[in-house]
Image 1 (cartoon, rainbow, N blue to C red):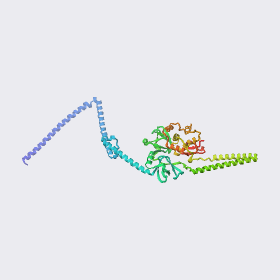
Image 2: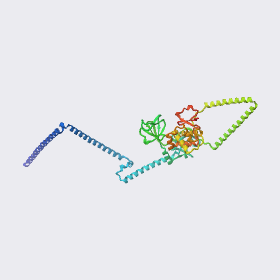
Image 3: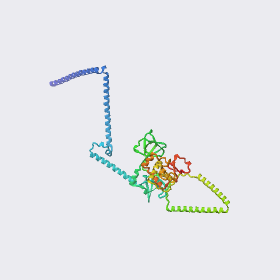
Image 4: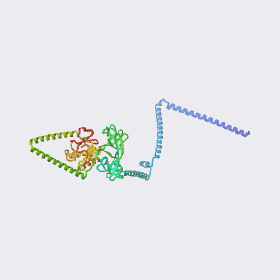
Amino acid sequence: MTLPTLNAIMHCNRNVTNAKNDDAKKVGIMSKRTKRMVENLRRVVTRDIINPRFVVRNLLALIVAFSLVAVLAGGAIYFKDARKEAKAEQTAKADVPVKLALDTPSMMKKDMPDDLAAELDANAKADVAAKEKEVIAAAESEFASKAVAKDIVYIYKEGKDGSEVVGIMDKGAVADILTKKGEWLKISSGDVTGFVKESETLSGKEGYELAQQYYEVVAVVNEDGINVRVEASEDSDIFEVAYTDDKYDVDKSKTDKNWVCVNTWLDSEAYISKDYVTISEGYRVARASETTISVKKKTKAEMEIEEKTTEDSENESEEDTEEEEKTTTTSSATTTTRATTTEEEVTEETTTKETTTEEVTTTEAPQSTEPVITDSGAVSLSEDDIRLMAVVMTLECGNEPYDGQVAVANVILNRLRLGYYGSTISDVVYAPYQFSVVGTSSFYYYLENGPFESCVAAAREACAGTNYVKDYIAFRPTWAIDTSALDEYIQIGNHIFYRGY
């Protein structure tokens, strides 16, 4: 090893030793500084914190400190969750179709230029209009094979006049056209299949528009004795009581998960619990006729034959009367005593025969429950009289089948014909203690705002001569009358019709 090398090694060792000594000195200096800091801290704690004189202040300071820490921690958590929700919402918006973005409120477009916002709105409206046109076009195409009733339409068993009526289509009711033959359409609607006249129905665009006006959302009651309440609460007042199969029009905008908002016969709102109704919606359909109806118009030839038969019967009756008178005169000339005896015998025999006939008639009096349409003759009434009749019918039988509405109109007209209640419709309607609905607030409401359309149509049909109840002038609800006490009656819907005199 050379001398220079040895000197270099020694120089390096000297430098290392000097560095270690400097580090030791620094550590000593830092140790003294730390000791001074600790000592100062101890003094402060002893003097200002642990000192019994400052306990209350220190406790308050501690509470404030902990509260501040809690607030800061809560704020941090809240903002963290808010950031997560904002991120999730932004992700969801990214998946929304363009149409929804176009339909967003204008406040979300406030940062957009006015021209761009207007263009987006115009495009959105154009898209909606185009889709509506597509739906309407498809519906109109579908209604090309459907028949929609212009007004009340009878469905016949066969495609000819005078056939039995098997069902009725109310205005706006929809039926599928099965076949067409001449002026008749074979249709199917609801549970009824039969024939209607094409001239009484609409199809295509016109049919679709009419059917839309009578699209129904209906609630059907499932049980008897269900309370219909004024408000959507079990604590609310009871408006009326509903029974199985009672139907109400539904207001969907005010229906929730617990209560169904329905329109009552007073055109007011009421509520039924959803537990007791079944809700269905769709176009009107035909209903089966609840009575056996046979519509037949007499031809001129038939009327002439009937008149001739009546005249022949009257002539024969007159001849028989003349012969009886001649025989009686001859017998009287022969012997007064014998004639007297004969007359007594004849009188006794006649009396006995009449008594027997009356007994038989009373014993065998039929109880008719199957009404048949008859022609009671047309009655000419003013529009005001028809309206007044229809108002009474709206309240008396507005929820009854159409046949029942015509029958109530027949009762009113039969009273007019009888003359006992007056010589005008007004006299009949306002006769004391007859129609309980007259004079009520509901009566004046419909008098001002108009009765049900079906009741107006039924009143007109009754005025034209259609009669379901013969000459009966009285009717009562089925639950309010004992039919065993009646000689004869007719039941239509929920009403019993009887002679009443």
